[in-house]
Amino acid sequence: MTINDVTRLNPVSVARQVQPSSADEVQKAVKTWPGALSVGGGRFSMGGQIAAPDSLHIDMRALSGVVAYSPENRFIRVQAGITWRAIQDRIDQHGQSVKIMQSYSNFTVGGSVSVNCHGRYVGRGALVNSLRALQLVLPDGEVVEATRERNAELFRAAIGGYGGVGIVTEVELDLDDNTRIERMVKSVSLQDYPAWFRQEVLRNEAAVLHNADLSPPYFDAPTAISWLRTEKPLTELRRLVPRGLRYSQEQNVIWAVSELPGGGAIRSAVEKSLLQKPAVVWRNFEASMDNASLEPRTRSVSTFVLQEYFIPVANFLPFVRQMAAILRGRETGVLNVSIRHAPADMTSMLTWAPTEVFCFVLYYKQRVTESASRAVEVWTRELVDLALRNGGRYYLPYRLHATRDQFVRAYPESAQFALLKKKLDPGNRLRNLLWDRYLQGA
Image (cartoon, rainbow, N blue to C red; front, side, top):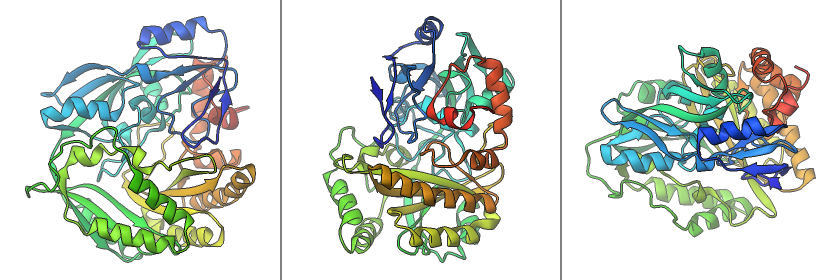
């Protein structure tokens, strides 16, 4: 059978698929299958990180339960296949929110741990900063608990480890308060943005969420969008985004912006109309957005893909200016660059933020042809080199266009990770296309 991800660009033929509903069933699958193992959840990674050829694919989405929840102690322990939205359904009634997650709620928690995700949470950074403990099934079938104090090296390696050292089966998370938040929108000059962000957002105790958007063709005029705690009356009474909505209007806008002449003007008009409306919502409402609102009508001809680069704060301006030059000089199909921020992550082994960074998330459209992928590979490698020259890194959940040399330069800790993987997984049973490409021979 074939396993693919949301982009539909990375089909992988696996030997078999199982869908366990407990750690015991994961353990049984690991112990009884003689060959390679691969692990997937929501399948939102975009470069084959969820599968390996001829492997037993372990689909984690049936591990979707809540193991323990303590509103008083502000933590929840869940099975790894649960989605953030399912957690929100449980904790909203207690006035609590997820502390750190992606901007959309459909991702599985285990997958989010495996990529060490982040969102728009001001001053919070990577998901690792809200993790208390992990349960993992190791390549030999042993079930272990890992925390910052117990099996600490395994804890560090599993977060952002893309299933290379163990299969995450349970996750224990810190929680936060659900509060009313108000949207504030401001145009900021590119050169002033880092100082403005530090003064007006990072030092603002009311700031909960923030990002800034750069639009084509020049990518030089940030629109800063902040959500601040408030006591103002709600403009949206629903506490969570309803499930199963149809997003026909959003799909029409995405098509028009990416295909029609003057698409940029259409985008600007739509965004201006939306952002000018007063918005006071529950934090959980904003955090429960469905990624279906970004999904095109079809991916049969074209698909939508992400890239991300992490740049030290001091190099914000040179990076973004040179990035814009590359994007203008190539037919990249980039529809948006979203800027976020993260403090340094000193815990995870394959950290994407060894220092405080600005995060540049590129959202682009490409045809589903080999020639289109080759063209994207060219400008992706240019952007990776640009990030490296500016002391930065690139994010690993996306297409595997970076060279092995670029990977090693971006993640020098990968040598330590490879040694630990060889110790825990001498038969290289836990596999996917990411580690097949970059750790072979390491």
